[in-house]
Length: 337
Image (cartoon, rainbow, N blue to C red; front, side, top):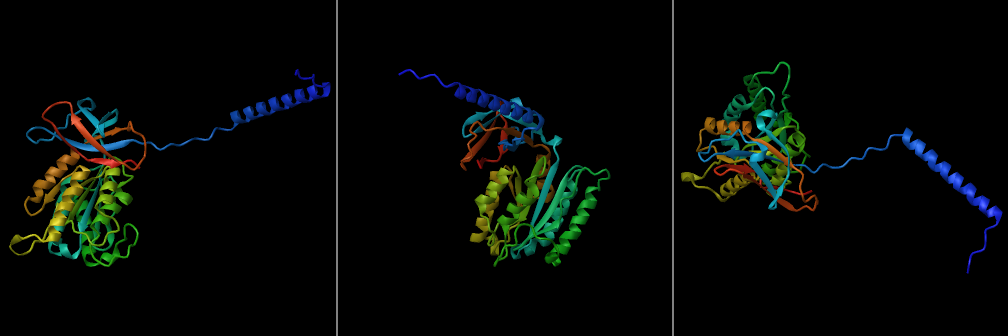
C-alpha cells in the first residue's frame, strides 16, 4: 500500500532536525581541528640478536655486512631491519661473583681474575657493575657511567671495584640488595643472581650487554630455575659467559653436585650465545683475552617476526652465513611474550 503524504508540520520537524544534526557535526569537526588527537602507542616487536662469526681457523671475523647473512625464525627467513657491528655500540657488563661457602676456597682467585678482566676489557665508553651473592644478592659496585668528559682509567676503576669486593667479603650486609628480599634457608642463589642482574641492571641498557659469572653453577635457594633464567637473558639479548671454579673431591673426583653445576653453567652460556670456561684448565689471561675479543667483535641484528603472534611459544633462531666456511654462534631463540 503506498504511504500517505506527511503533514506539513512533520516535514518541517524533519528539516529542523537535519539542520541541528548538521550543525552538531560541523561543531564537532571544528573541535577536532582545535584539539590534537590522542597519540596511540603500540608495542614494537623487534627481536634483537647478538652473534659472533669465525672462519675455518677459528679466527673472529669483523667484516660481515647484513647482505652476507640470513636469519631464520622457526625455519622461516626473516627480513633484517637492523644490523650493526659491536665497535659502534657501547658495552654494559655485569660481573657476578659467587661468595657462597662452596666458593670460599676461590675468593682470592675471584679477586685476582675480576681485577685482571676489568683492567684489560673496560673501555672509555663502557659501563660495568659488580654483584656478589650467597643467599642474598648484593650490589658491590654500581654501574659505572661511561662517556664522561674525564673518564677514569681502567686501573682506577679496577682498584675501586676491588676495594668494594674485599669489603663485601668481610661485611656483605653493608651493601644494598638486588631484587626482592627473599626468605632463603640455604646459601646459594645462583639463578637469581643472573635473573635479577638481567631484570634490574641490564634489561634497559643500550648497546651490547653481557654477564660474566664466577661460580661453580650450584644452586640451592633461588626463586627462579634454570629455564626462567635463560629465558630472561635471551629476552634481553644478554650474553652470559660462565667462568667455572669447581672444588673437587679427593683425587680430583667430581661429586653429583659438581657435575650438575658443570652442566648448568655450560647450558646457560650456550643458550645465550656465550661459552663456558673451566678456570682450572685455561690461563685467565688467555680466556679473558678471548672474551674481550668477542665482545669487541660481535654483531647486532634485528628483525620484526613474520609471525607476530605473542603466544608464549619458543621461537628457534638460526643465523646462516651466505658464504661457506663461516661459523656463527648466537642465542638459540626466545619466547614470544
